[in-house]
Length: 114
Image 1 (cartoon, rainbow, N blue to C red):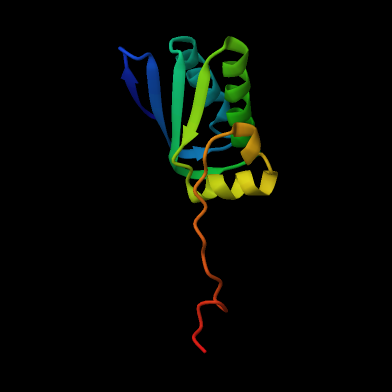
Image 2 (tube, one colour; image 1 turned 180 degrees about the horizontal axis):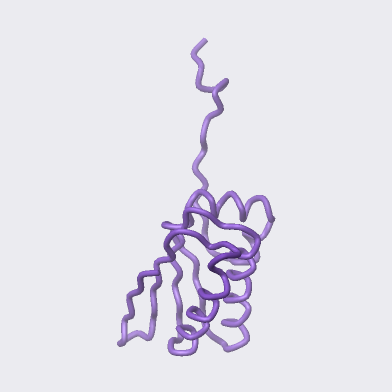
């Protein structure tokens, strides 16, 4: 987890790296909640997430809900393909309210020339 903090604007940016799974969620939860307590706005860059499961998704939901309860802002940016797939599968993309970039991937059949 790499982070960058802009003291002047009270914005913290954290690049989430590797996996957001049952094996890492509890440790990350404590770190993210601690960071949220020290800033008005938290940006989580998910572009380096290589694996995410239900526990990782639950962590993202928890952080978003905690921020709302505290009157703070949490944004998720740079969604990796595995994050986009899970958000699509779970139907929770709208809950987060963050813009997602969906890249159209032609199927093998569509890629054939006539």
